[in-house]
Figure: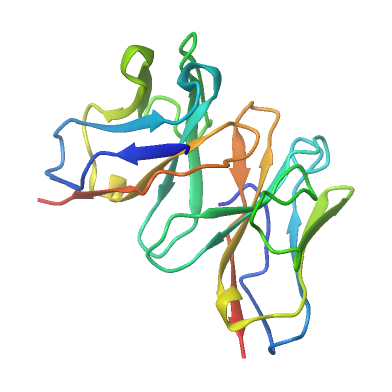
Length: 110
Length: 116
């Protein structure tokens, strides 16, 4: 059982926006501003998309944005493109001094 | 350029031991935590634990404490993940990743297959 809860799947049409939620507890998401998001295409290593709740690494499109309210974090992808179709995982630093991951969300671009 | 390069795929039998590696380059290896992540076939990501190569301070996720051992040799910029007695349920892809607050760089992954 994953530490953080994500929807199993979301979908959207090209050009639309989607949001993926990530719910934890006060011992992880709610307790630290260390929420991150990863994109994983089939057969590839995960790629960091958002760190520290809302920061984008260099080279990541500004179509990706992150936020947090209480124990729930969110990833929003605007202007959906076919290449965004992938699995997305949230993560948070935890009170055990390790990272916890969500179960992953499969994004389908219709 | 920051790189994490992992050792190659392994096929082992239940009960055998195994040690896989992750070599860092392009940054001050001793100054960044390195974590290990498991991905079982068709499943999500699981954080096993993390090590600070500078002083070998090691933290394990509660689910993996006692199941694996993480170590590092800073003289050769390499961290290791090892098992003393593999089980079929250890089959999966294992990634190393830099940092322990978020994972900014990832290795290419090492596929471990445990089968009789």
